[in-house]
Image 1 (spheres, one colour):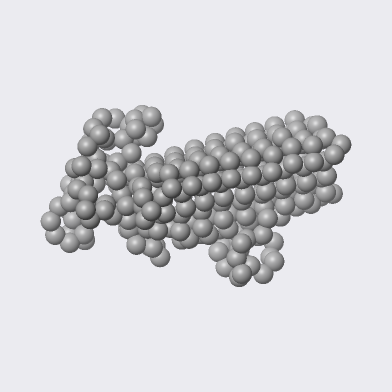
Image 2 (cartoon, rainbow, N blue to C red):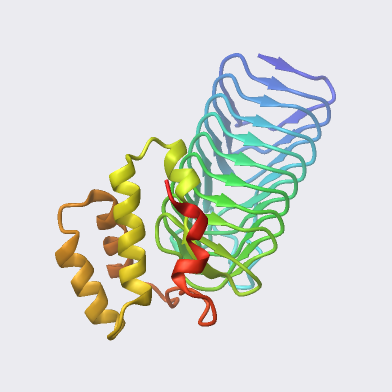
Length: 274
């Protein structure tokens, strides 16, 4: 363990093995820092915060500060960050709130670029990337392998499914189904994230199945409920499509994002052929 003499580590903080705490870092009394973590310099970690092993935090990041919520009452709520994350300069993450379950949780192997923000009571999955200044409102759920483009913002209580790619400068106000792409000021769906699926090793038939299910859900005739039932029947043995169906079936306070009414599914998904 190496702690720079200019750093301040409060009594009660738990510091793991082979941790480096650089110049001018401030570590609160209820903080736990895992083995092999590296806090480069000028890092502020407060609250009841746990940082997983191997995570690297860059200057001016602020982790575990109180929620930016007028309903927070000062309780000992928590922030838990997983292992092997890369948290770049000026990233901010808040602890949870009493009314939101008391926990903000970030998974492992996540990459948070400069200025990105995780608000109170959010749940962020594993292998997630936030580009510069990507922002979450409170109570947001982000699935595994999600990419949030630079300057994007996700409305409070929104769910973003596994494998989604959000384009830069997008405002996400509705739930995004797994494996989709979304872009725009009001973030309409824009096809399937085939590139992301390829990188994760999905088979050609799995990608074709997801794309066919997407088209069936959003471009066929009939009500959405009827189309959803048809997709359930046709793809009952498809695990990837099953994730989309399960996501849609979960309760949410937000509506489901759809393709833009002026854009056909075929046009938006034209370059997505595996």
